[in-house]
Image (tube, rainbow, N blue to C red):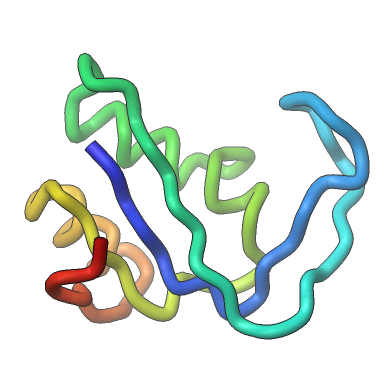
Amino acid sequence: MYLKLGNPKAKEALAEGVNASEFRSLKGGRETLVNFPDDWTLAQAFVALTAPNGIWANHSDAPAAWVASDSEGLAALAAEHFGCKVRKGAQ
């Protein structure tokens, strides 16, 4: 299962590892692609994405501009959470 997100305020960690605490802003709009493990449930993917120190918090300083996914359920949840539209046909 994957989720692609329009990222208007992308950032990247200045240090490697899951406990990075310093980031730098990246210029311009970006797309962030998240590939979830095949055995994960929709709930696991959504929690990992939206947790306070989760995937999105470590990749952006703003809500997603749009979302696209091979899972209609995940796309709908993410779109509702971020207040954006689902982009159809984005691969």
